[in-house]
Length: 432
Ligand code: SDX
Image (cartoon, rainbow, N blue to C red; front, top):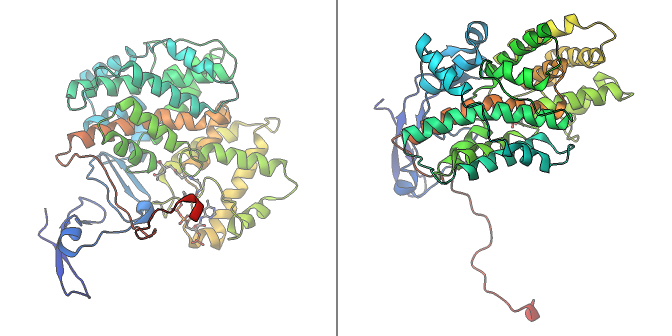
């Protein structure tokens, strides 16, 4: 705790407010503005929360300028190289890497919870096969919020642990069932003997040869690990705000899924491929699209580029870029995906050299390459954000638990700058 303070003086009244500075272990310290209204009668104003710390957290650290991403202090590059999704999930939830016994028990708790209520299949089948899988996923989580509604006990650690395990193990099985359904395949069943990534690939592509299953499971495990958490992004902030009313964790995760779905957030990986397809089918070249993205009058944005925090390469993008290039190098010219990936590489080259992107520090983000790898694995585009949600469920429940255990835990309720009408009297319709 520092004794640092910020003094704000009101030029009108000459009144002053002394605001304490709270110390970050890393990254900017924060000014605690809670006394601002009491001492000076003002609120702070920060649309889009560009400069607002919403909570104290120990889970993930991002340094956007340096392109750093650490889960509980461990650099993402090391975890991607040496760890795996389930071990990283344990780390995010428990603030420590597990020993053998801890990992074995955690993995067993997860795999013994793969047995999702088969009624979920009926929920999935209510939807038209052309429905967006994120809508189906949200409905499935709402079903679970009803199924487990009676014993909600947010303040009970054991209840939170059981909900955490149930969510981390159920979402991947539901994701695979949704994929089976939209591909008009039989629902496949999970196996307790498999990791989350192996289960997903085996359920999604039961007829794949073992070597291909193994390659795809490894790539999927890294993709899950890289997408597991990312500090206070829009969907995690949604889960925190939703969970702050002590609602069902299943309902809070459903809210997070809805937020992640948007094309400027988790929906970007799907939007990247849609953009590549559009360019491939267009008579315009890559440069035309780069110029569209630069044109302020044009709403077109280069999907997969830019980030609210990273003003350097997204470290996850660099890791997935390597996997994408490995997949691309295996593609022969007959592969239908090859033209798409060639376009992607041209966009990447253009954007990394063009002053518009360089001056705004718009680098490729995790979604630019994850869409490419998921397409190479054979996942349908509409499922990409479901894959993102599957992985991010770990981060969401880690933040949900951290919030509830925080001594400052209370319902979130932002304020506003009101610029509407002053008091107005009602007039009968005949006088309007
Ligand atoms: C994720 O927050 C997280 O952590 C998210 C995430 C996670 O793991 O949870 O990392 C996952 O959501 C990654 C981002 C995926 N989204 C996309 O790839 C969609 C394309 N990107 C843009 O929509 C945009 O870059 C955002 C939404 C990601 C960031 O938007 P900001 O921070 O609000 O930035 P901005 O809109 O203020 O842009 C600054 C400038 C603007 O130009 P000027 O007004 O300065 O002239 O850069 C321009 C923008 O027009 N710009 C782009 C652009 N992104 C920003 N121009 C063209 N193409 C783009 N992609």
